[in-house]
Length: 583
Image (spheres, rainbow, N blue to C red):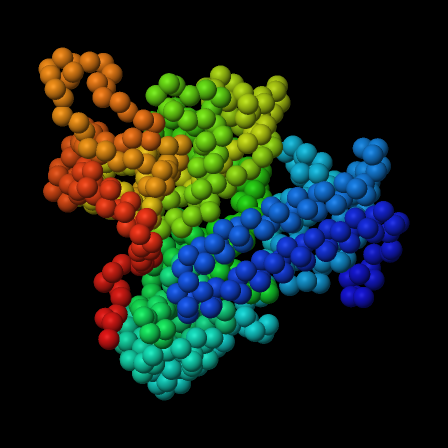
């Protein structure tokens, strides 16, 4: 029995059983999670990309599966009397704390408990009695290396020797094909950076022990240290056709690291027993990055949601801004609003769609689930799904209240005192592309228009057809990257029939209100894209000059054929010019 367990007296049998079911369910979930994560190393070395994607999908579903299993099991134990059941659950929570309090993943155990609680008791808003609801300050583990999350490599005289030690102590050490060449590349890049930022000085390099795996890449994540200063150093590793590995680049800027761990990327597979310590290390490299996003980036999306939830309510306690409509064109499928002082948008599915939108609320949810499961390739915004959030009514603009009551009655309940969001998606707030193109200086608008085309091409390479290509459905990140965020018409290329526009047989055919030829629901005519990829003017100019193939049926049919043939393109989360030459 652990020390913390002795602090709590033994509960009555029902309470004890509830606590044990919760504990065992959490342990089973996290063990299964780590088992799937453990496969990533061999998937990478064996170049089993499809299997890795299958593992990713499986892992994403484990938390929900474990929570519902616990809900079903605890329902069999709880009293049928509501008041008695509540008392039992509160007592079980205290016992559960005793069982999990000594674990290195205690924060995940809290989130697991809250997920079970909210579903079991159908919690709306906050329930301080039932949930773990601390909204005050929390501390990440001390980042001193004493628990072994990372290795420290002093740089006494030779930077190259320290780099060699890093590679030789990594889990991939035996797989490097030409370690001396990798050392030369890495040391040269680091020295150039040191000369620029610290006049060449360095004390040591810290490297996290676990390798970060995602898609076709592996990453050694660390930091350079001099005095009290730190700087990211991340080594992307690629596997070659002969099964050996090579360092592909060196990422040494906070901006590069931020993009790597960004909200437009799929989640890493990181085999760690103490995730909070890994997040603390990452936070030292990325001080601006929210803790919620860091947990999500290493695969713990449920706990990322917990941190976002807490950050939102904590922010509201210390601010007086009101929810209002988000900037940009009003959507026909989603109502979108934001809290100006909080960098998130909230999206609700409307009750009714106009006839031009051939979709249903269920289809929209399916598409959001598709995005959650897939590789986002840096072009799709991660969306978090919440249920039964509650806020004071006076924190909402009345115009927004009227819109929600008129358009979202299935998703929202408005009373005299509160607004309850029964089903809502949250996304990081972006600068709407249509506004960006009109409001920014011409050179920045042109850069965004070029990247707009690149985003469409990247999505096609990832087997994604956005559906609606209007600029209003794209946004610009703080790093200037164009990403897609409106998923109500999104589809896989395999679901779309890309057709060439038939030639009309007469003038009368062209003047008809409806197409004179048969059109199925999944038919798309890329030649029509030219009509709405011309506004504002810079878009038309850029697409004519840089991206003319987007408006051709041949481009889309070729991309579709590649995916049907099993092609899996590379998506590097860093610029091409950062890559070392392959030898």
